[in-house]
Each structure stands twice: as C-alpha cells, then as structure tokens.
Length: 119
Image (cartoon, rainbow, N blue to C red; front, side):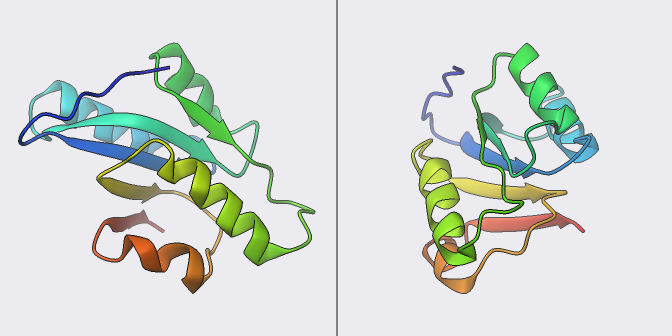
C-alpha cells in the first residue's frame, strides 16, 4: 500500500478508472515532473481487469476493485464503493475514465473535491 503523507501544498488523490488508465498515467507523469503537487493515495475501479490497476500496483499505489456489473442495488454499490474511496482519505477524487455514473447521494459529500477529467 502506498503512503502519501499530508504535507502543505500536496494533495492526496484518489483516482477512479474503468479502463487503460491513460489519464492516470498523465497524472503520474505530471506529479513526477513537479507540475502537479499531489500524490496518488488510491486507484479504484469498477472493473477488476482494468489495465490501470496493474500499473498502479506495479508503482506501489494502493488499489480497490468492486465489480459493478450485476451488483443489483446501484445505490448500495455506489455507497460501498465511495466508502472504500473515502477510507484512503483523499483531498480530491479524480474520475479519470471512470465509466460508471454515481448517484447524487454518493457524490454529494465530495462536492468541490471531485473532478471528472474524462469522459
């Protein structure tokens, strides 16, 4: 599990992905180049075979997977998924190719701290 310290000027990110993770890679590159003052505390996905998860694990970044297909109760899945994301204590949640719509009750606690960069 990765450790991203809370330091002034450095944001803890949770990155939500569903696929390859090209935007996740761009975030990592911007952090490495000093263009983004952040650390990725968690990469979470609704698809267990999302390639971005393997790259996150290889980089020592914590991951969370919860298959959404066939989950039945959408609102319950959304709550459980976002509770797992919240456990990483992110300052900001970045939806980077996360292809599942989350219900309002799941995202309301994150108003002003959630950014959808694709799609």
